[in-house]
Length: 193
Image (cartoon, rainbow, N blue to C red):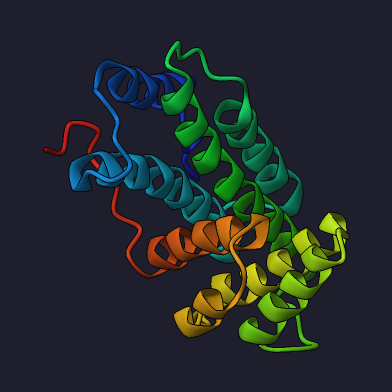
């Protein structure tokens, strides 16, 4: 068995992204700004995909993988030091999208892919739960959809488009990054122009 990587993501890497975003005039309507925020999200999703893949390949056991996920989560979901309120809100949106990526990975490791429904059904159930203000259940359903994404199933974007904008759509956005990361876990270059 080859030695697993010891570091999948670093605080320094996250901070480099944050500084870059902080230095730029971020306008969500601008394609380059939107791409920068998406790259930030994708970069984290790639790290999560690599951790889960190391687990699937037998390089990490359950305890190690949960520890690695917790390390990355701590880096990515901690408070960000950005002065501009609007930029801070946009980064917060990325962090919100990533919450479900971590839950899905943890659930996948703890119990494997969900078996009770398909990705779209879980997403619809999550939207229904959000409409009822049951956010814990909503997050649980999206995380279950995420375990299927990790297992190779695809998100039907039509399902995401038919639900009302809210936390569930943010979380599904995160799962979309995870889906891309699982199929193509190439590192997003921080200075990719």
